[in-house]
Each structure stands twice: as C-alpha cells, then as structure tokens.
Image 1: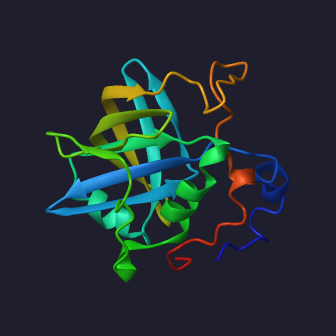
Image 2 (image 1 turned 90 degrees about the horizontal axis):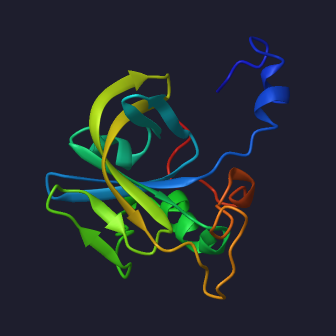
Length: 179
C-alpha cells in the first residue's frame, strides 16, 4: 500500500494519465504465461529499447524471470475480452489463458498472439528493480501485426483502430493478489 502522505501531489499527476495497455507473454521451462500490462514504454532510441514492468505478484513475472525473450502485444478497444482474460485471470489457479487462442509458438521460445494488431518479440537485455514491479528491458528482435483495419475496414488517424487504454480496462479486477 502506498503512503499517500509521502507524495500528496502524485495523484493529480498520475490520475491524468491514460496509457496504452499491452499483453506480455513469456515462455520458459515448458511453462507459458501472460498478463495485461499498463506500465511499458520505449526507453531508448539508439539502440532501440522498450521496457515492460511486471508485478512481482504475477505468475508472468516468475516465468519471465527464466525467459530469454518476451512478446509484447497491443490490443484494440474491441479486444476487451482478451484484455480481461490476461488481466483478470491467473495461471496460478490452473487457468490456461492460451487455450483456444490463435497463437504462434516461435522457435526462439516466444509466444505471439496472432490476433494482436501489432506485436514485437524482445530479447531481455536487462532488469530494473522498481519496487513492486520489475522492468524488463527488451531489445526488439522481430515484430509484426495486422494491416491496421478492424472488422468493418475502419481506420483511425494513425492507420488502425483505437488502442486499448487504461480507462478501457478499469472494470477488470486483477487476477493476482495486490502485492
């Protein structure tokens, strides 16, 4: 639990943020896992790097800790059910989040969700302790995705349907204990 008296102005700052949400998947030692992530960003231009922050309380964190590569996926607002699966369920309860999903198990060990509008696979090149989350710094080694059209053929101003954001997922109760 955060001590609000330490940073009283932070709620005014953080409360205005509405970041994109991602599904991060990991595979290692015959296990696969995935979770919904709201803390992620490009963190370097040269070399290009991206960091995803995984909760220590999350099963995906434990699998990712043994993985060489992680896959990071964008979702659209229309994929709320997929976000709820990866954000509101836990593999710790014996749930196979990947059952019935179109996915590709890659030779490098990464698991890519085929219906993601965009994805990349990153080699883990570093980790940063952030408290209850750990940042996995990724060196992108491959990427792909769909052509940016939704099922109706609509496009937004960036060439695709609107991305899923934090505000679209506030109804999802996290599938792991609150640290």
